Image (tube, rainbow, N blue to C red; front, top):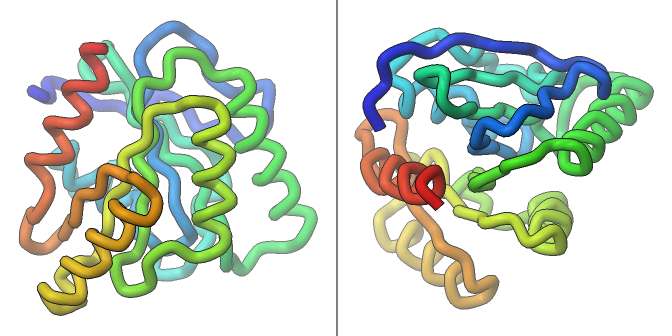
Length: 191
């Protein structure tokens, strides 16, 4: 994946702002504070394209990053713990549901899981919804530099065997998994 140019093409806060064109889309989803923005920045070799916050739930919109004017990386709002009002939480939930109903040409959904915690109930709920719609899924274990190698191996094996998932450990600090993830994205874009 050679990156010539990247731009934040759109930020959607409401359903009618959802982009519905035919360009291929790679979607990133995960719990609040799992590291979606950091991972997107790392993959795109940008430091501050996707905004990073230490406070969970800061992304309350759908952010579309147009790459080489050929495809999108899409950063969906995090689910789970977030310090936002109930009304705002319901708005975000409806926005994400509409996104999956209206968006065409989703090539891959990258579900990010904190390697320290593994799958939690909200992750399983999202995974079931994604699998129901027959989207291609890739699981990425983030923050793998914060656990021991043996713990990470067990976590990876457990997810692969228990849920029959393709799993890639990923670290922002050491670049572990970056090339593997890029290969999967390139393959999905060509299908």
